[in-house]
Length: 263
Length: 104
Image 1 (cartoon, helix red, strand yellow):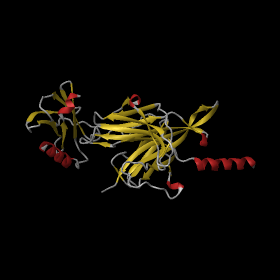
Image 2 (tube, helix red, strand yellow; image 1 turned 30 degrees about the horizontal axis):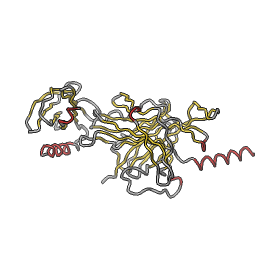
Image 3 (cartoon, rainbow over the protein chains, first blue to last red; image 1 turned 120 degrees about the vertical axis):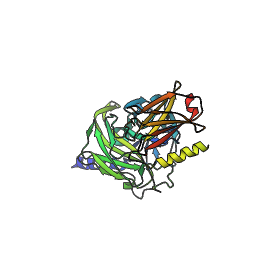
């Protein structure tokens, strides 16, 4: 009985402290046309997107782009930056990079971060984050996996989305669909062009939650213009040591899409 | 400037044609202009007519895309170039190749 109570207490404790962490990968533009600048700026962060809390991000293990089936390593070109939200009293590290579009096609950028130790949850967090940029009208590749341990495959073309469009995706773990995967959804309050910072009226509005169907397929209609993050969490079948003790690793398949108001 | 405006207008007017929207892209490398014409899903425009127009709105040359949608020609020393692709059935588009882009 005492053990059950303890477990209950612990789970309550964990639940209340676990704000949704998101690996963030945001480009300066999601659709590059002939008349647009051909150089993108990308930002890689580890934050609570709705609440705008930054967390310290170590240099990623991998940062690359896939276009027309070709992988280009971009890790060498990233630089460390410092930033914080209005409510934070110190700066945190995030990463940034420029990338010059040279050919038409879909460009799927992805980041593999270093494992982040989260003492409140007694586990490591690894969020594999992806975003797709469309360049010069050749729209091929957005529906292809890049081969990460876990990832979201868009079933809706992930650019050219209006506000209120339905975004559908499929959660894969080691290339296989994840039945009934749980997906957390958050709005990026610091989205460029966000006219008013959203203050959620209650905690469930910070992170919305969807359950995928038996094929790992989920749907979500995005109610505001800006960037939206989708994060499907799984527990890795591997562990990492922390102070000599093996700890669980939460792996996240994160995907970012941008919406615009129809006007 | 006028050419740019015209190009912009033409570009805008062609963009609502969606289902079979055709695109052309070009770049310069080693004194050669390489062009690539394609549909949105990545399929090449085969035997599409390519017209190359200089900054004085003079037709410089014409050609046809190969089975991979490619067409290349020696880069003329003539300032900005406008490349037009015509895939038939009114499916056209343009690409402005700036002279500055040749120096990269």
